[in-house]
Image (tube, rainbow, N blue to C red; front, top):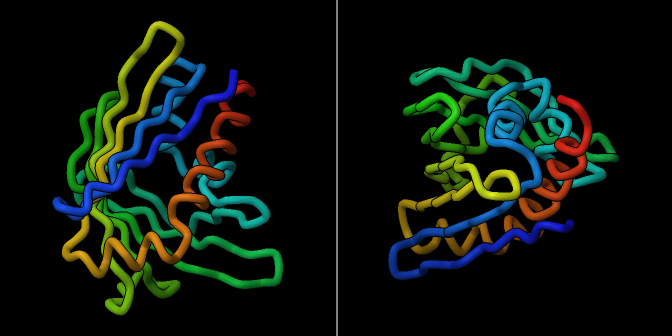
Length: 164
C-alpha cells in the first residue's frame, strides 16, 4: 500500500498542515523520527543524505545535521527541541545554520508541532509547521519543501518496511 503525503497550505495562519499515514506501529515511526541513526537513513530526499553531527532529543536539546548532496554540497540545519511527550508528540524549531549550529538568519525558521497517533492500519503523523511571517512561508515553498519532504517521507516508508 502506498501512503500519500497531504500538505495543505493555511496561508491565513502562515502554516503548512501535513498528514501522513504509515503501515507501521507508532513505536516504530516514533523511533524513526527521534533517533539520529534512523533519521540519517530517510530524512533527506534522494540522492541527498542526512548526516547527523550531534543529537540530544530532549526538551532544550537539539539535532545538528547536514544534508549532503551528490556533488559534495552541504546544507546545515539545526532542530531545537522544545517539548517531548514520548511516543506521542514533540515540538521543535528548525533553522538553517553553519556546521557549528550558528543560525543563518537569512533563511526562515520553521516551528514544528508533530503528533503521532495509532490507526487501524498502523499510524499517522500529523504535522503543523508555522512561520513567523508570510514571506518565510513563501520562501520555504519556493525552495521545494513540499516535494523534498514528500520524498523523504517516501524514504521513511521504505525504512519502516525493514526492521528498525
